[in-house]
Length: 297
Ligand SMILES: Nc1nc2c(ncn2[C@@H]2O[C@H](COP(=O)(O)OP(=O)(O)OP(=O)(O)O)[C@@H](O)[C@H]2O)c(=O)[nH]1
Ligand SMILES: [Mg+2]
Image (cartoon, rainbow, N blue to C red):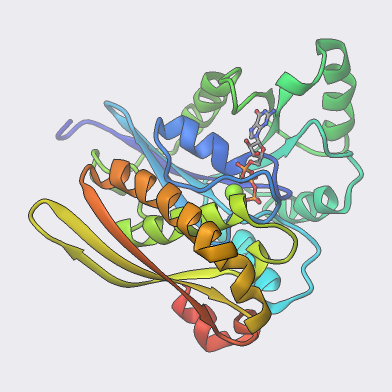
């Protein structure tokens, strides 16, 4: 590659919550770096996935879903998504077939994308596995109206339909330039961060109502020994009354969360993991700028 021209660029996935941005990132990478759940507002930080070819590198940013944010945490999430667009080469407006074209979250995303008007914008419509072909065309028409998308790409991040076409549309718009990352790393996220996210994902999957949104995870110790990694983590909640729900009857729910997380962390690290979880109350942490900084905001 020395002396030859390489192409490298950054594309950001932005769109309403729950449309499958993180699912798409994981599929593109062929491995899980970003957590996924059936609940909206799962992703809270910007996560870069890196796809390296012979002569090019694509950096794809997964971002929190754009929504009407009221609480300080939610406002931070939307800010992270908006700011992710600052240095990108390609803006990818991602939505799915279940969201009405005139939904608020859709409008908010469109406004953001418009503001970034100088950059090429692509529209990705996900979850096409959920509709019949004849329902798709009118949807493409309604979503594309009034925008200047360079391409509109229907995909299913779940079964892979259209994903290579999407990648090709991004690849052909990469500017010339040196690669930003070493060729063999899939993400800029640290192992520690991914581990905390895996635990948070299990909370999202195993609790309901406000609990997932009141939960943050911190890593208190991460000790790599010769044949195992010992991890201490805290599940941080906002109110004392939430403690019992996370822990469950006789500790059953916390155990389920811990077991599911440990299995996945073991496969990430390729090693046996001892995972110790604590539940801590940090009153109203989602309104505490100091704690949010600790979480990477
Ligand atoms: N049927 C179907 N479901 C999908 C597809 N892609 C993602 N999903 C599901 O949609 C839900 C949300 O997926 P995520 O990847 O977490 O969505 P997101 O856009 O990252 O959501 P936020 O992080 O909350 O903004 C999950 O239950 C996924 O399994 C798809 O192509 N088809
Ligand atoms: Mg996500």
